[in-house]
Structures are given as C-alpha cells and as structure tokens.
Length: 427
Image 1 (cartoon, rainbow, N blue to C red):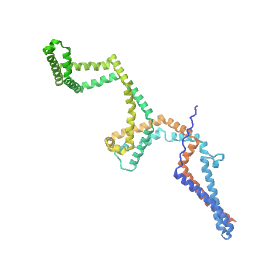
Image 2 (cartoon, rainbow, N blue to C red):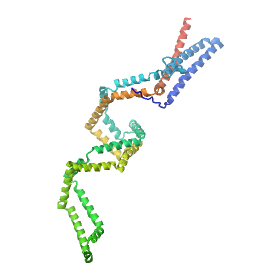
Image 3 (spheres, rainbow, N blue to C red):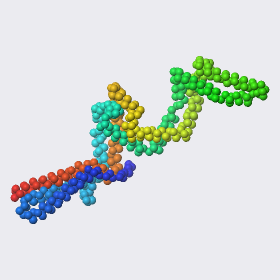
Image 4 (cartoon, helix red, strand yellow):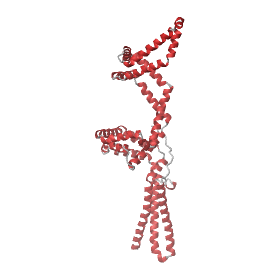
C-alpha cells in the first residue's frame, strides 16, 4: 500500500488563554519552590516559630512534588519532558495512527449509524429553521448564524481556483450540450408553440420587420430595377413605374399577411413551419445538419470564452451576497427568499416533504459514504506530522490540563499539611 506523504502544516500558535494558564501553573510551582526554601531557612533562623514554618515547609514541599508530578504527566502527553526520551512519554505523537483509527471508529459506531441519524433527524425541523432564517430573524443567534455562514461561504468561494473551476464548468456544460439532441428538442418546442398559437406574434413581427426593411430600402430597389431595365424602359420612364408597382405590391402583400392570419401566403409559410417541425424530429439529415451547427457553435472561441466566464460571473455574484448578506436580503433576492420562507412557514405539507427529504438525504449520505468519512478522518490524522497533531490537541485541551497542574500543586500542598500534622501527632 502506498503511504500518503506527511503534511508539514504550519504549527498553530497557542491560544492566549492557554498561554495565560501555563504561566499561572508554572508561576505557582515556582512560588511553591521559593516558599519551600524560604520556610526552610526561617526554621533555623527563628526556632521559636519552628512549628509554624514546619507546616509551611511541608505544604510547599508537597505542593512542589504535586506540581512537578502533574507537569511531568501533562508534558508527557505531547512531548518528552526536558527533551529526554523517557519511556512512555510523548504519548500523542507516538500513537497518532492509533488515535486516528480510534477517533474514526468512534465516529462510525456512535454517529454515522443510519438508525441513530434517522432518530436524531426526526427531532429536527429543518424547514422551520430555514423559514426563520429566510424571513429575516432578529439579531441574535439567527443573525450571528447568518454572518458566520456568510463568512464561511465567502472564504470557500475565494479559495476556489477561478481558472480551474471555470474549466470544470465549461467542460461540464459543453459535455451536456453535446449530449443533448438539439434538433428533436427544437422541434418539440416549436410544435408546442405552434399548438398554442405562440408562433403567430413571431410571424407578425417578422412581417412588420420585412415591411420596415422594404420602406427603408426603396431607393436600393428602384436602383436595382433601373439597372436591370433596358434603355428603352429607362428612356420612357417605365422603369420607375415598374419599381413603384413592385414596391407597392410587396408592401400591400406584407400588410395583408399581418392583418389576415388566414392569408394564403401566410398559410403556406405555416405549412413550411410544420414541415420544419417534422424534419427536426424525424429527418436524420436535418438532425445531422443541426448537430453540425451545434458543434460549430460550441467550438467557437467566443462561445468557449462565454462558458469559461459563467463560473466567474456566478462566483462574483455569490461573493457579493456572501460578503454583505444584509444588503442581499434587502433587494429583490431578499424579497424572493423571504417569500420562500413565508411559504415554508405557512405550508405544513411542503415543510413535511422538505424535512422528510432532508432526513432521507442525510441517512443516505451516512449509509453510502460513512465508511469514506471514517477513512478520511483516519487518513487525515495519519497524514499529520507529529508536531501538528500535538499542537492541535494541546491547543484544544491544554488550558484544562494546566488547571490540572494548578490543582495538583494545591492538592499536593494540602496532602503535605495533613501528613505533617499526622506525623506530629504520632511523634
């Protein structure tokens, strides 16, 4: 089996609270050592006060022993005390692989069981939580959650490589476009539009555009008629008459086709559309031509550039929303989201479906990917170098461990007092 390279991550700095508690515990140990030597000296200097200073020395001596013992125990968890490789020290670094396996097994047996997840998910009203979040909850937990989630989303979007992600999006969309049969789809859309008469306004618009184009190019038509007419027609001026008749006839024809949807020429145009619909859906030659055009469009550099820019445009929009969620919620998007939240709040049937879908999705993820999640945890911990895992664990629990040092020092001192008192009583 090929071993994964160890990740030399940057060592996380110790939190300020841990540093303070470490200073307190160490300072208390130093104070006990100073108190021990002071009391020991004062016993000889002031014999009359020897019993009192005896108790002080006993307390300080036992506190030193307790503090040193707990310092050794706490230090031995993460490193060799004083750098000396004493057996059974540096426990966490020497057992990181077993720790990773144990943590992964703990997650698998206690959290990633479908039955456990299903029971827990039944207690969660995901739809209600989404509704409250979308309908602009008051400042507090909801507001903090929104800000935290927004920062998380913004960080994730900023960390994504735009060039690589753009290439992925371009490839995915291009593959989808190539898989789709454009001709049958276009034929079905056109057939549906014609059944409902939605093509009629398009034909009207095309005819009006043709009439306008004819009016704007009368001079060009007259010139073409004049160029093609004989010298006799130009000499007698009949070329102008022919041009006028031609222009008037075309203008009248276009006007009649706009006003009369049962016009014979217009009906023949619709028959041509019917043939086009049939050819798009059933004619192999037509399909090949449409597919060839589609491939040319996809391969066009302008189209490729547009596809690459889709992700960056979407990413920029999402970043704007994530960086300023309140502004986004105040605009049209916010209005849409609030309406969605109100719908979830007011439609119990929809809320139940969302909760059921969420529960099934989470249970399905645990069933299908539970082993993968466990393996990811185990391999991640295994991949950490010993300094990284020691630093991360110490940063998480080190403050409590320093309290153990403080308690050990004080409890040791109290035990020393008790032992000294018993010793005097038995003497």
